[in-house]
Image (tube, rainbow, N blue to C red):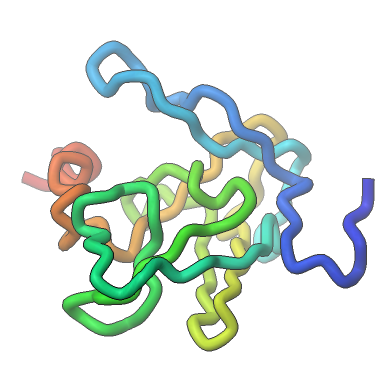
Length: 146
């Protein structure tokens, strides 16, 4: 089904199911997967975010997005569509990248390589190395660098 030309949210190329990274050690969690083959450079998903109230501490909540280039970050947002289910990885392993339009509160996710139907969609969280809620995850992702 084609999306409406005026839609701000389109995640029709993505579906969510149990992540391929989910196991007894990590626990059960979901991931985003390609519903169709996707070519390098192709837009996978687009959406909107809703900023959270001033004073919200995103360092304690892994389910929200860093929404500024300011460090330390003070602006946090919830994203639409399947974006919250893209898991993280090393930059060299990422098959997607998110482009954030902070001034418009929108985002787009693009393929950084060809992606097969059914392949899990991953990118590197921009706050992976400094957010408190990601400290254990950062160690897991970068374990072979020690």
